Length: 90
Image 1 (tube, rainbow, N blue to C red):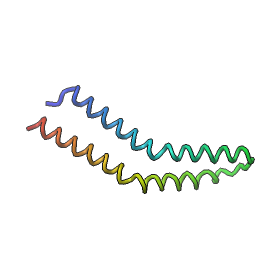
Image 2: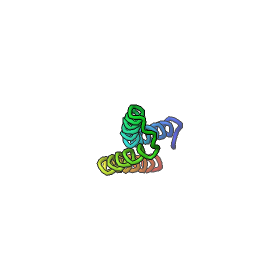
Image 3: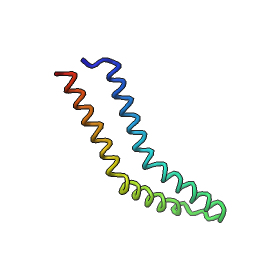
Image 4: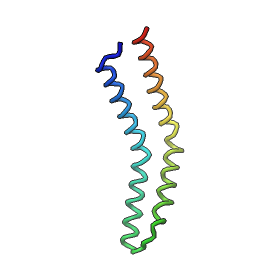
């Protein structure tokens, strides 16, 4: 039987995992966007599309480099959920 404590633990673990995985992809893009914005402010270049390409490239690089780790974390979490469900039912 699934109790509220077990369900709460599963939800908390899932939310933490989503936050960590999304932070790995978003934080580098945020840092690059901030650096490009500072560069634009100091050089007075007001081109909106200038910050898009570096952020896109950094995000793609992070997904290519860290994608295997992200997928492994998600698969491990999913397998753990199914194992816990099987243990609770049987």
